[in-house]
Image 1 (cartoon, one colour):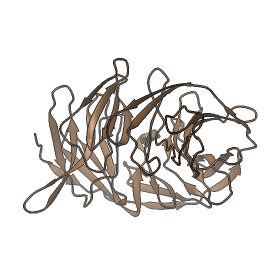
Image 2 (image 1 turned 90 degrees about the vertical axis):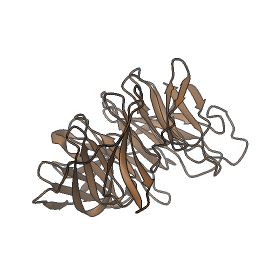
Image 3 (image 1 turned 135 degrees about the vertical axis):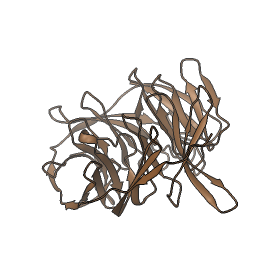
Image 4 (image 1 turned 180 degrees about the horizontal axis):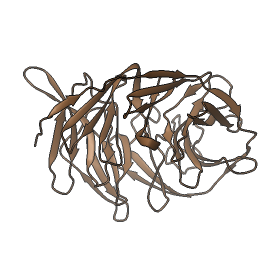
Length: 355
């Protein structure tokens, strides 16, 4: 089923403000403590490229360019024949409907769309968009509006209830924040090649912060108005977890243990603890799901090792590499992740950790 777009809305009076951040040391963290966890692994039979938790605790993945739903309690996996292919990313709204970019080849040329799957009725609704490439990041806000970007100098918002798409043209190429981009006052957090940015849709003002050092990863919007992200440093420098206060332009960093490398995919829980992944850069060494407690005295890091090839083995046995690419939480507090290439082969697994 198709729906036509009723109209495009181009925002007026965009004000672009560049803000410069400065770094304040977060203090010396306590030694990172290895933790035990119960780990359950599901092999979905095709490469997993994204993962989201639905409102009823179901686990949605984009797997082999098709959406799949895993019900952990019954181990039931459902594959939906409609290939919401696109770039292999998806989002799930509060009603349990699944959104993803897609494209169709037609006689005049390729048509790019944002599609919605209703897993109950199996209806698929698609909205044509003007993005020249399939969106590379997508998220649904609390009002059911769909935001997407294509690593280009624009961000789009689809309002399904009115079939209206609004496009903001920006001075930098951006992606929507991967896990939780929606901040206070309706602001939308974005990542770009040199740092992080935030768009105020009400005023069309974009504020962006260029990282003075290191590479700032995708931001996670906290309910207190701050944004959290991992900072990756090249060479022998240790990676860190950072918090940006946009009101003061202050960035506070918490440095991980010596040897921490490849920190990413930050997720802040309501208790204030900050979860993240650590992929490292070496074969035959564990990757980690990590947690920072910034309120502890001193601040404390904990880690849960993920060893290859079966996640929980004590030795890899061959040159393979575990790459956790998400930290998602179920309502029960379980941690979910999926994996990137291991030993240069696609990974078909998702895993649940019960700390």
